[in-house]
Length: 224
Image (cartoon, one colour):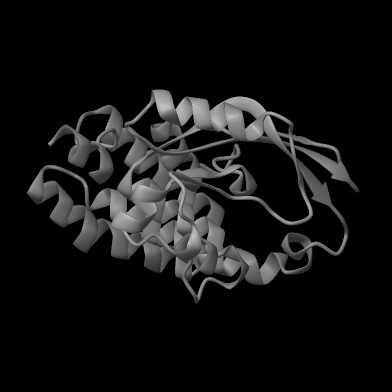
């Protein structure tokens, strides 16, 4: 994937898995949207499964929802094969898939993108997603889950670092977060409850004006 980023010469980069199928107008839909929304760094969409399962994988639409849903994980936040990114953003911020995250490098990549610029999901189904009993996400589920939890922890820590009140940010980073993580490590509560609490925490900070999720780095650059 990184080699493809390096070689790409166009204005946009469309992600796509080799065994899936694009809907006929996928690229045109995403191109038209990005052309009319210059403040958006990347857009995705939804997928329809085929093969051993046939679920409709609908993604949450808005930027703030995507950030928060990455922690709550009750709904789909990003469908990686639907990704459509500005090449300018990829190059300016050296956005690349990183080693060390097992088979979840795509989740880490989108967490990095969300920290840089606005990402939205369009309401259309853009990909028909092939499923089988031997696909990587099924075979490596346990290993992948461990790597995903590292990513979700880093994701939460980044957005807590965006708390605007310095005293509150210091208490969250150096007092509350270490205690919560230790309790989770001791299995006082499940990892799923731990991350849902972080979701509630960041959501509450955002709703009460203590954290600004709505103006990432790329949008700030455009305004300046």
